[in-house]
Length: 132
Image 1 (cartoon, rainbow, N blue to C red):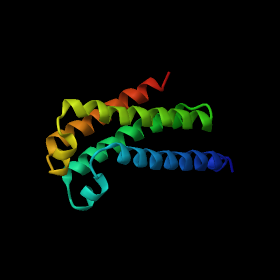
Image 2: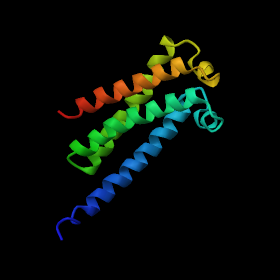
Image 3: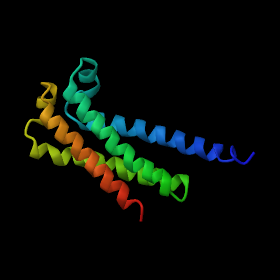
Image 4: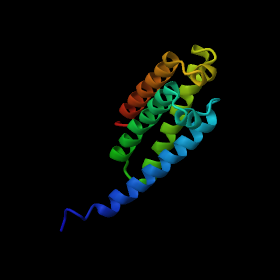
C-alpha cells in the first residue's frame, strides 16, 4: 500500500497549514482597523471582498511553501514570511486609499476590491518568489 504511505506527511503539512492560516487570520484581523468578521456577519460585502482577497492572497504563497519546502520547519518559516508580506500589503494600501477602514465599514466596495486585488497580486508574486 504505497498510495497511503504519504498520509502522515500530508496530515503534518495540512495541520501546519491550518495552524498558519489561523495565525494569519488572527494577525490580520488584529492589524486592520475595521472589524471584518462582525462586518461580514452583518452582510457587509466590502468587508467580505477585502478579507476574502487577503485570505486568498495568503493561501497562494502558503501553498507554494508547502510545495517547495524542504522540511516542515522550512514550510513554517516561509508561511510566516507570507504572513508578514500580506499584513504589509494592507499597511501599504492604507495611504493609497484614504479612510480605508471607515470606507469598508460603510460598505464601499471599490476600495475593498482594490485591497483584495492587491492582496492577491502580492500573494502571487510572493508564491513565485518561493519557487527559487
